[in-house]
Image (cartoon, rainbow, N blue to C red; front, top):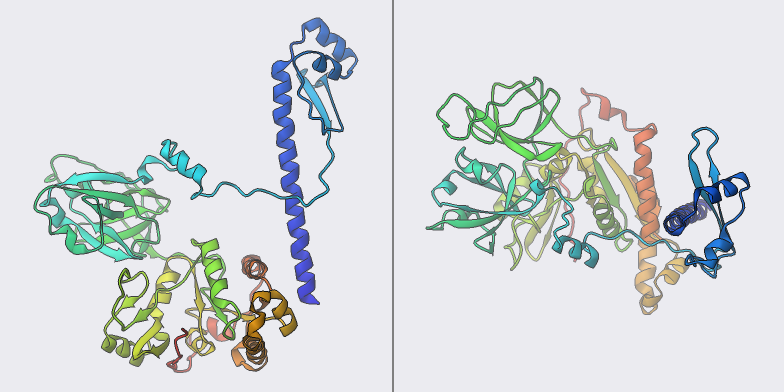
Amino acid sequence: MADDEDFLSEMRGNAGRLSDCLSSLLHRIEQLETQKIIKNIEINSNHNEEILSSPTTITDKLLNGKGKFYDSQLTSRREYLSVDPFSGQRKLVTIIERPLPSGPLRAQSPTQLNSPETEQLIQNKKHLLASAYESRIVEIQPNLLEGLEVEQICGQFVAVKVTPELSKFIRPGDTLVELDGQPFINKKQIYQPKGAVQIKLVLSDLYSAPMEFCRVLDDYKANIISENINQNLLPYLSFSLQRGDILQILSKNENYFQARKVNDLSTSGFVPNNIRTRPVAMLCPYGRRVIALIGANGVGRRSLKKMLIEYRPYEFAGVVPITSRAPKQGEQHGREYFFERKEDVLQLIRDRQMIEWGEYNDQLYGTTAESVRQVIRSGRVCVLDCSPKAISSLYNSEFMPFIVVVASPELDELIQLNKEQTNNLDNLKNICEQSCKFVNENEWAKQADLLLINRNRDISLRRLLDALESLKSESQWIPLEWLQTNFQAPPQQTTKVTKRK
């Protein structure tokens, strides 16, 4: 019954939003039609006084001339001029009565960024972003590239350190996209050219750079020089700071560090080391640092995780797993997997630095605790589709997981939802049995913060988002040991799971 009430509540909410959308559309139609009427009406002052003294309709006058603006589907439409008694401003009042369609109402979604309309907009150079955020191509002599340090982060090659001379061409935080028209896929490409090269650059986003931040404690006015770098001043590409500014630190040396402003990533450069700062970290607004989706196989945990991350990529993120196998063609280190030696992965397991791990085809796969920490330090919630045993490594004050059990509906309902799989009833029956057993018998399922019966992926996503939104405003009940600094947590247990095909 509770699920039915949630479903009805969701439908009522959708109907309300559609009604609001329709009202906005009708209001806009009325505005456009009124503007068209005003543009085509010519009323002399005497005629105005006559209408103002007795507000009669002017429909007949419009229809007698060129102003045939009426839709035959309209029930009625009247216009008259009036005067505001306080300001004396003249207004044309339009009253429209329109029958609503008897069929279902549909609201068209706004234009997507990858739509043909947007592509045409970009081709016509009506840019959606400021010029500082657009890609650019620079030509650089090879000797200057010796002062460039690049890190591969999230599959991108980001400039984290540049020399003062090179900073006129490449800024700290730039992503190297192409080199002489070819995709940039390896750091070695920087040091191979023998002549001038053309590099395509684009500003990296906040999460594709080192996740180290600091708060500025004093105002600072930059002393910028562009020619003589031997003076006792900072080099080219310096910028002023105000107390309270948050900086993303890209690299450091003995004299200054290279950073950029978080609230304007295009402002990057050199900051002196004598500026007082305090290290800070982003904290997600939900209070919990990890969302752990657990449940039986086949209930849709992986799909729900993917939808959540795609819906709000700047609030939720997954981790890049680690593996001991060799990369396949097209795979990149740090994008699909972190490719490490088998001995190194085994050492991480022995050091209890793995959240979970498993073996498949004599190769190791798993999730490291450090990869979860990297997501948390970026100010996002780490979303994991993990085994229940992995919760043992997460259930502490460092990760503070929000545990969500994803379960399947009853068998009859599941069959109706998967009519195309009616020839595979045994599989559906097995999913229901395993899900029911998991919900009723698993110890972590009994301690879960939320139970989702996954009848519909969109509704399940909305229920999950609503539950997370409530964390911002409602009291949360967490284990007491998460708040006790002197609490001794039990030894971390290494969890071994079998990798799903």
